[in-house]
View 1 (cartoon, rainbow, N blue to C red):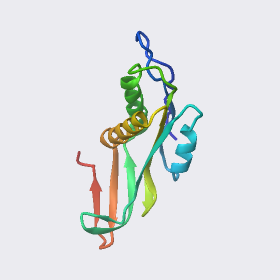
View 2 (spheres, rainbow, N blue to C red):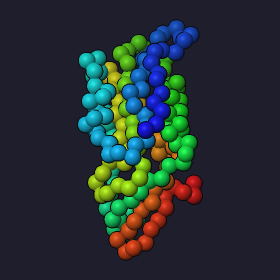
View 3 (cartoon, one colour):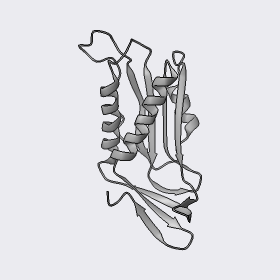
Length: 167
């Protein structure tokens, strides 16, 4: 549904080649997203670690019961998602010793979601767990902070709240 960056290789001009990165998937999706699919997409024979994150819709917020929610995205959100991942890759490529590729998969849902459904799924594979954890954590933080997506929560008492719309 969105533009996927095609980034592989190492940074030019580095004396010690660093890890290469491969962005397998970086999109917004109106369709359900799966942690299992994300993990399968980044796994490889060279990866010693696969780290995944699934942010799921919970049934409460601020002490109030939540029935469901909906995510809305700015028209530029697809490109921002691709840019956020590309920037992360650009900052990490060329750092450290040469290693097998770090593979990245990320998707954020838009539209209506029910309790328990994944809203944000990220998976990262790398030669070692430290790098996989670090890249996945940073990826999640950047997507949540920079991609213009707003959450509309529908509470059991009939009230509605927008989260992130005023930021």
